[in-house]
Length: 406
Image (cartoon, rainbow, N blue to C red; front, side, top):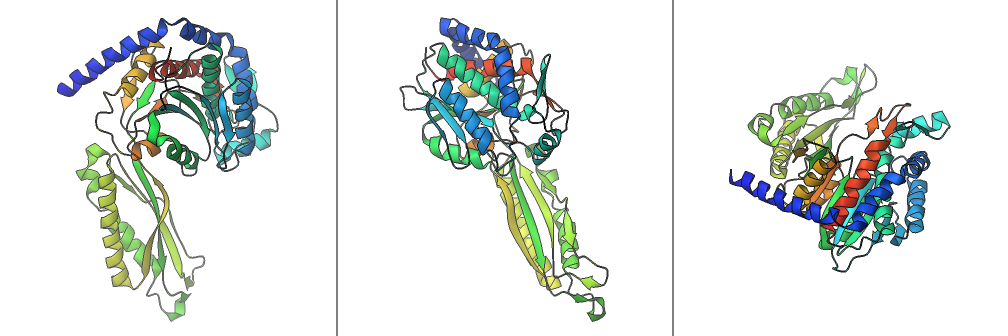
């Protein structure tokens, strides 16, 4: 009950802050700038979304984003080695609000772009073509930055706009941006949609490759020791661990999806492996599961005379920050979402995106979720133009409130 009262009080303060921002002429002009720029914003998505940009190969798209940042007058525009594209509207406080948009696409999207051989097209309220769905958030961020810059909104804190690379392959770009800004961050805003949902906590996700190694040989030499025996016993015992049931409220998960070993019927393999997906809202639970897995592997290795090793494949940070739900960052974003027309805003502590890096490091962050369009990863992928404009308005209003300017 006390927690609910605290959230209500914080929400009331956030509403006051939003109403104050909305009374500013520069903010109203910024919102109008976004509406009047609809055609240009949609065309920008055609051009940026049409650049083939799989994870790790975002350089051309990053340069295109940086060129637009320079053209609108952002400061300190740069493309780093990851490659992230970053531009800033400077403030005076030395602190910063950092807006994040994902720069890269799935490999399947890149394949569809190559196969299509044409740029996306505007069709009514949609921009249609592979590469448009994820790039909607980058273009929305740019539209908000331009509206802020062109209409004289002067922030107290730096407004940092970062299109980050390699989100799909380990949050590489976000990790670099976080290291640069964590010490002076008011908060990070991961732009994933128009704010129909808001995440303020993050699921810890650890992916492991468990490798089994032992003597190979022809079947006539005997079936043991055998890596498959060790794999089978390990998988069976790991999946019997009690954590998912005991920690259901913390969404503890243990999953094994892939097993790989051997090539022919008459030869036992020298090596094999299986995947291990461990996740929870609580990092301590993930750590406890991993310790239990290590104990299982040690015992199975002793029993089967097969070496077993856990190799990290992708370790995604996360966790929960006390007081996050009633924070200014969350309640302000929620107030803006309602102002933009969402009667019910889904607020969750189970995010999984670039924001995980900040939350895992103990820095406030939110993920703005919601629709972007449809058919992502298919040849007929599309992005919703009204959603893109609404996303841009959400970013502008967050900048005008959290940025502390006038």
